[in-house]
Image (cartoon, rainbow, N blue to C red; front, side):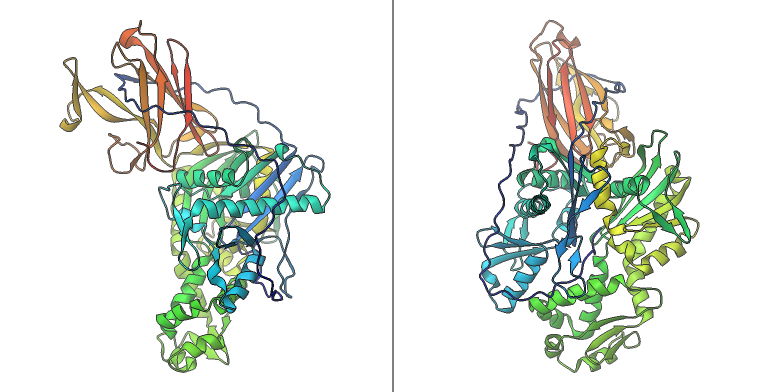
Length: 624
């Protein structure tokens, strides 16, 4: 979903950059969360049963849908209006480049002043920062680029997590993400104004894309960033990127496979979607239901194997040739380094089987070398595969192939593993989307390694996620079920049994109980209908209990025994009042967990009084 654009070569501007002015928009305050009580109560005996499916409310139809595709390298927006139902409009940016004047996405780059006010986002941010760096005036500013990947690398996030600018000065990451999302949204509003489209902010459903392989805390972090940017919580949904691409391909995209055109997926069709972006490779396997909705067959897979790994490998080879100290010093020459990065972005997309990759040798780079750069190249271990030409560094076809092979070994291994899973039996099609799906060498490798499958490429793979996210906003229940990536449950006590840890034994009224038991609601790998609930009944542990407090946990393993086992994390706490004591220990609370598109809601109902308490599980930070 990245790689859409070309580098910028704009005219310099001499004015001091000023904070960006935003048009006022009606912003609603986020809804307050229920107050959590801290008193601890322990349930007695657990009687689990599968919960009845709750009736799913009809999704509200929105007159305007705006999707924000927040990518590692490039970002964009698109919108749809019921007044013009057949058209999805994408944003456009002026690149300032003579080669490519207009782009449908803009770099995910943010420039702030020292007061953390937005100067610019995207192409303009890169242009202004480049000029500031050339004039050595960048110390009064803060520049961020390709920062989205920090969320992939963090399994458990905290709202206070910091991120560093170009001079290693920290700032809360939530602030950087929210300012970037706000600018994307404001760009869409400017588009409305330029097209003289009147839109009521209260009538917009906002869709924000996130990788499916991200953890729950990273997804909730993005939701909080969007809310901080001014998007009301009840007007915001997250779309998982490969699912959005699947919706686009199934609903509208003309896809090309060889000489055949594939335009429909019939009920029962199983297929894999691989979203090959700049930061991540994101895989999912789906099946088309009879009602044309889709269900997930295998939990999302993938990793940090996006197109940016090509850049990284190229820089590693250059460091081995010229010296790591030389490359580090060159990176400090911000303007030339940014331009070289942009050139690599352009060149790698055009690589085909058997082609060479040629990059310029900047005078600033050659000047840093301790010997003539041609001598260094010739005498390096890459001397036969990397050649020096006048002012250029040329990677021969064998080296180009090695760079791509080494980079995507993990990707192909995971694709093969997923396709061999029993749930993927019957998959015939692999759909490639995202910026890297434009690279011929990657497509050819997929065709070679997975020759028994149809490798399908939409005609506009870069926009598949963005447009699919808009379509998801038009039909948010099109994904009927998903495979859980974690085990979810809560902390209970039960009668002590043989094999229980002695340290978990507690005696209450001369009866031995085992405490801190992980009572599983949903286990890793289970298929859960979106919007449906799973229930279990929990009994009062004493006749005097007036408050039952339940702590909820997630685990990285399928069958944890105790909430203290490695990989378990407390993600929420729910307090349910039980004022009527007449039932003694026969009183119970019905505990349920509901999986939405991203958020997880838990509910407790006192069966005696019918009083209900619910909360959204907090996946950021630690619950005490």
